[in-house]
Figure 1: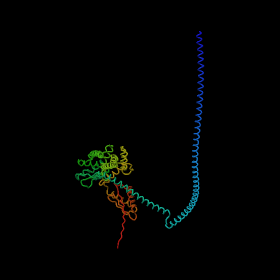
Figure 2 (figure 1 turned 30 degrees about the vertical axis):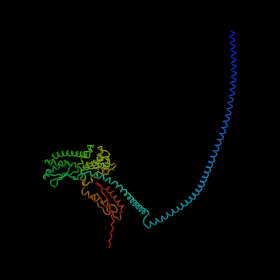
Figure 3 (figure 1 turned 180 degrees about the horizontal axis):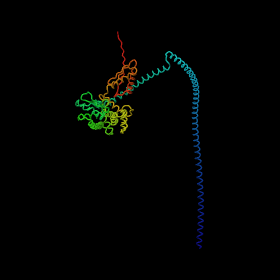
Figure 4 (figure 1 turned 90 degrees about the horizontal axis):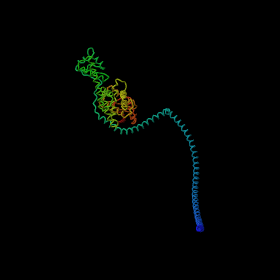
Amino acid sequence: MIEIIVGLVCLVVGAAGGYAVRRVMAEKEVDSAEARAKQILQDARREAESVTREAVVEGKDEVFRMRREAETELKQRAVEVEKKEDRIAQRETTLDSRGETLDRKEQAIEQKEAELARSRREIDQLASRARTELERVAGMSAQDAKQGLVDQIQDEAKRDAMVIVRDVEAQAREEADKRARKIVATAMQRVASELTTEATVTTVTLPNEDMKGRIIGREGRNIRAFEAATGTNLIIDDTPEAVVLSCFDPIRREMARLTLEKLIQDGRIQPVRIEEVHDKSKSEVEREIREGGEWAVLETGITDMHPELVRVLGRLKFRTSYGQNVLKHVVEASHIAGMIAGELGTDVLLAKRCALLHDIGKAVTHEIEGSHALIGAEIARRLKEKPEVTHAIEAHHGEVEQRTIEAVITVIADAISGARPGARRETLETYVKRLERLEAIAMEFGGVDKVYAMQAGREVRVMVKPDQVDDLAAEVIARDVAKKIEEELQYPGQIKITVIRELRSTATAK
């Protein structure tokens, strides 16, 4: 136990001694750390003071530099402000000067306006006195003089306009005529048609003179039965071995011709036989009508057509216009229209179709009253033809204004086919009346001396008085005559108006 106690005491004493030693050493370390910390604080204070002094010096330098720059900029702005103030002062001076000048000018203008008003009043008074004096001297009122002046100005304006029109027309004609002549000439040269030989009445040749008595029959019963069955007039006159069939309907006339020829060949001419043969002839004519229409559509290459239209077209085979067979005319016009459309680059088939159907109204004009153009258009419209085709049909004689290129081509093709040499003929009476009317129209214009219709009415030559009509007025007369002819007359093709102004001066040397 003693040893344990001694050991414990020694342990306690050693622990206390170690603690005392560590405390002493710790105090020494603390003192040393405090001394180092004080030294570090002193060094930091000295360094901070040094940095602060340097920062203060640099800040003072920067403030001085900025102040110097601000002062320099203020001086520059002050100089600019002075310059602007000088300019403003100069402008004010200039404006004051201009204001004074404007005031003086305004006063001068007011004075001039007053003087001008006085002068205008004086001029009006002088003009009134002069007008009164002129009216007294000239013996005419101001209204008459004004009208004379207006007429003179109108004449001068018309002359000036005619000069411009002449120049424009010359240029346009030079460019357009070549193209138009080429197209029309090409179309005409490619068509070769026979001359017209058909007439409006039918002559039937008899084998002998005795046949006339057999046709008449006992007490005229055969001829009465024939005329009743066929609806035609059978003319038996002194013409040797021939009789004439007359009827306004060409189809009935053709049926009567076939009936009469068959009766003559058969020799049995009696009322019952006449009716039988007429029924057979009617069937043959209907077949010819159908074949004629089919030939026309095949000839022109137009196959998609309503059967009723084909039949109406075939009826034109027995219709003539001024001696020209209408079916051949429309086929020819269709070919011409196709050629013109090809030259112009438009729809060839549509143009041919329009030209082929343009005269279908003539097939029923003896049954329906009205213009054949409008009748034909109504037929085509009822049979569901294209609007372009119906428009071309109704517009080809001017009843309706032409609105499509196909309508214009149809008119041209119709004119070419009808106006070519040998295509048509007209009665002497109609021909003479047309020529007389052409000359009468031209004679209605002032300054015209003589008028001559030439080349079967294709040209009208107008002789004017040179002392009353000058060159420009001659052109005006030519244009006016052409316009009046277009308005009043109907004619195939074109009519050329030529105004001739000739001045002859004659003197005799003795």
